[in-house]
Image 1: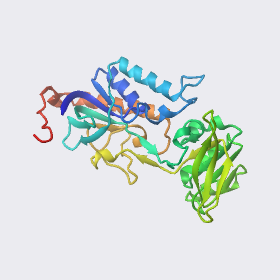
Image 2 (image 1 turned 90 degrees about the horizontal axis):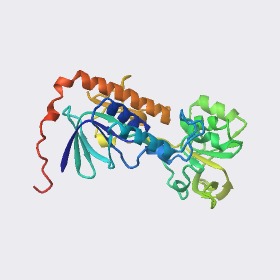
Image 3 (image 1 turned 45 degrees about the vertical axis):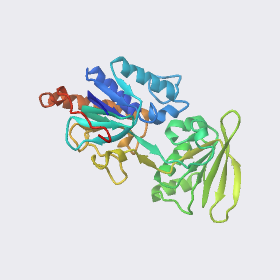
Image 4 (image 1 turned 135 degrees about the horizontal axis):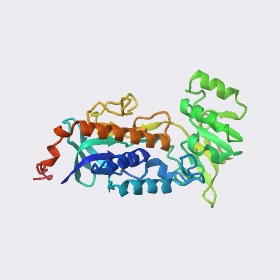
Length: 330
């Protein structure tokens, strides 16, 4: 198992991670970004991005990610196209981060930007039409459905909040819920029930997303859970809001999290472990925007830079060669 030494490891490569790496690299700190399953995270799958500042004509998720990647690389960021499989934060700095490819990174500071994933329906057509009619973010994509027929899947606060937001754009917004009553707050329910554009389909699940040869959503197949009736209907957009899962399992309880698994930070983006910081959707359950994630990454990096400067005299362990790590079977 190869052991590598660096000043900063950034876990994750979405807007938060790439921005954090830009700042730490510009501060002349050797920075390694462990990319994760996909460079750029969720924004990389977004077909059109019109709400990121600096792009008056809009851009695409992949183009935005590539620009951010290249900018951080310009200042010396190193990218490791692998996933983190284990960490050791319990013994303080230098922190140990292991990857699936058998690499070990020892870092003075770690910035966690590993994000959260929207829960999927895992039905035919869902993944095929992400960014082309299937979305998990009304704020990101609602604008593209002006005058269209939209369905929202879910019944909690997020689903109803997003349904209300989508009424600004859609001709109709139908909330499809597997139960016969919502789980959202009473205040949100009252607003939704009173809105002329919003309707409800109860006791129903979506079983398939249909599309055309151009790659756009054209309809869905639903099933009523009480009657078993299967129906197909035409829709232009499918917005899925059935919850998010933060990617915090890899930390094995070493970072403090809330009941939902989101990493807890203070106002300076510090976790409960001194020298470990967090940014983006690994802690943010509210905004979930590329621009807020980038701002988080900036703030976490600036705090990390200041922390490293304050502890410079204590962090000389990385100048010592690490002990060799025994291979399995030795």
